[in-house]
Image (cartoon, rainbow, N blue to C red; front, top):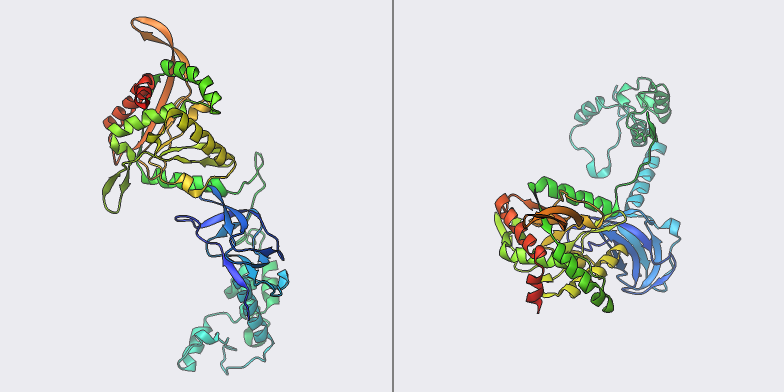
Length: 442
């Protein structure tokens, strides 16, 4: 006889523990084919589609949009094609079924005749079969004597009402048992300030005005966890520098029209990526990770550059793979594609893995200097600031130049300040002389 299939939420990526259900793509009672998308779930900063493991009829959807689903929890029940699906109300999660069985046992116990154990302390509670005590009866009586007599259902009520059964002196049940009414009476007699014990109090206002509470979930929760892990694992140091990018601004302006003809929006990021890669080639420890268990620094022989993209709810970091093999225009095109996919939540998990170095472009919003947090477990992150005009002394004359601030945070376990400063100077050299890597492309 065919049995309903309970499809549990799978681990859709490395270390995934939970996800937020964005929306269902099927309805209860609908037929579904194998590999047909069942739902969209946001996890590890990406929205992924969960495919059906088999064909059949959707019997029960256990979560609604906005719910957090943990790996291993039943997501949906699927019936065989042609099998009659039970009404949704009759399909219960395993934990719900278990609770109902416990309640049934309690009801049977409460309805069963009371058995007098013949002891002056009153009636003994029967233990569940699987943990029924063995040994001499007097020893059991002695163990139970210090414990208030009450049925399990009464104990649950007392727990919910935060009532200590040892303090209930007026037990009206047979042989001194505490009843449900005894617990409720004790709860009614509690002082107002005591009644809040064990209850969750959510304030809607404080002494200054009203409050709004926003759940920490989805991208924001993922960002929070990653930032804490990075900040409390890596000893951060931030080094700052300025680059005169007057010539870079001129080159970018001269290439904008050509890029537009190819359907490309040319920003400064491709040039910054090129400069960073040249720096990483000369200072490889900036392109590494630290294996703490093996006490080894792992130098990456490839250059995958992550770009922090500002989206609603947090930051997403898509990665430009093998960036050193791509031209300025190719980088510009891929940056645009990745940024759009990030904002539309269309990134695949692999789009965000494999990074060796990250850029967080605060300058596009208007920042000058920053102290960016490293994208763990990488060794460093660069925050280019807003390009601005400033009078500077050049060849004994005061001239107006275009200045780009640079903020580099690095892992002080892997490199020292002098090494990081030299790396930043290398980036500065290429930004101030962009013809160096433009010539290399030809």
